[in-house]
Structures are given as C-alpha cells and as structure tokens.
Image (cartoon, rainbow, N blue to C red):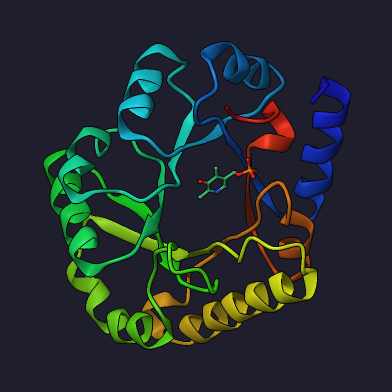
Length: 217
Ligand SMILES: *Cc1c(COP(=O)(O)O)cnc(C)c1O
C-alpha cells in the first residue's frame, strides 16, 4: 500500500476510534520500517522467535502485539516487552503470563480470545467459559485483561461474518457489566478481508496484514 492510501486508511480508522495493528508476520524489517516512518507504531506478529528477533533489531518505541496461538513454554521470551497479547485462550496461559510478567516486574495487557467461528481449527473460550473466568481474574495481579478478541469464519458470506462479530460485541457488553470488567475498552476483530464488517459491528482494533504489505508466501 502506498503512503497516501495508508494515511487515508489510518485517518479513517482514527476518526472511528479504531486502532490499526499492522500484521507484519513473515515480512522483512524494511516493510515494517516503511510504515514506521509513516507514523505506524502498533505491529502484530504470531511467531515467538520471529517476534523476539524483530524486537531486538527494530525501534524501541514499537508496540508489539502477539496475535497468534501462544504456547505456555514460550511466554518467558516475550514477557519482558509485550504491549498486548491478543490470543489468551485458557486460564493456564493466563496464569503463565501472570507469572512471567511478575518476573519482569510488569503488568501485561491481554485480550481473551473467544471462539465465534464454526471452524474447528480456531482457538478460544466459549460464552460459558469466559463468564466463569471473570470472577477469577483479580487473582492475576500482573495481567490486565482489557477486552476480547475473535476471528470470524473464513467465508465470503458477509451476513455470517457480521453475525459472528455482533455475537462477540454482545459478549463484550455482557462482560463489561461485571464490576471487574467495567473498564474494558478493546474488541480486537477484523482482518484485511472483513475489517469493515467488524467495525460496523463495534470493533475497536483491527489486525491487518495483506492489505498493507501484500500477500504472504
Ligand atoms: C495473519 C493474521 C491477521 C492478518 O490477516 P490478513 O488477512 O493478512 O489481514 C490477523 N489476525 C490474526 C490472528 C492473524 O494470524
């Protein structure tokens, strides 16, 4: 994407109160630096090794988002610098992040991943599991849950995608009624193909790769 087009997109999202996470997985440093020079600071990665390598080489004020499926034994490598971990899909992972954040003397922000698609390969809590987890959240002092994340079914059926995103938004609103969650302010939903649908359903953070950087191999 060219600079003018990028700035236009960024501006449009900004006016709607939506944060853009530029998904740079598999892309070289030069691609990241190009957007960095245009003012982009939030970048998303989903492989731990690639993320730690990039974090060491690239500017310190980049806010790194982990958007993939995170294995518990890898949390220690990213805990010292993570800005936001989007895909927390089990209480055991939450516990591990809390432990590693404490070692780094940090409080790490996370999102709970919710299973909204009808694809078996996707991860996340269901409605009942997340409601059961809420009362337990305050025992994790070094983790700050800020909201929810979800991925819609990979389909061209916009009606279906829209309904899944609305389902996530409704769950977010329900969680926010809980006193411990009244300050939640992030719904991470929407990728290159469906971010407009996600924003219409109430997304506050979109994760966009292909549209910005071109196709991945
Ligand atoms: C790769 C990825 C994206 C970005 O997908 P695009 O279709 O390239 O925009 C967003 N979210 C997650 C979780 C991803 O793994």
